[in-house]
Image (tube, rainbow, N blue to C red):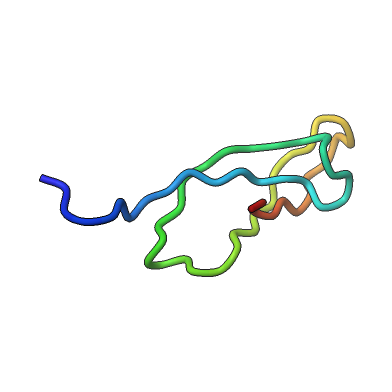
Length: 56
């Protein structure tokens, strides 16, 4: 079964162009991605794809 700490963790991605308007939740592997996660996701308020960063 599972040993030690859980490797995968849930993170919240927030829009960088208009904070608070678009949020996504996803999973990341703590061992492979040590820094903050950055993905291009769709912001429905701005009606375009924008950069979303992991919040702490």
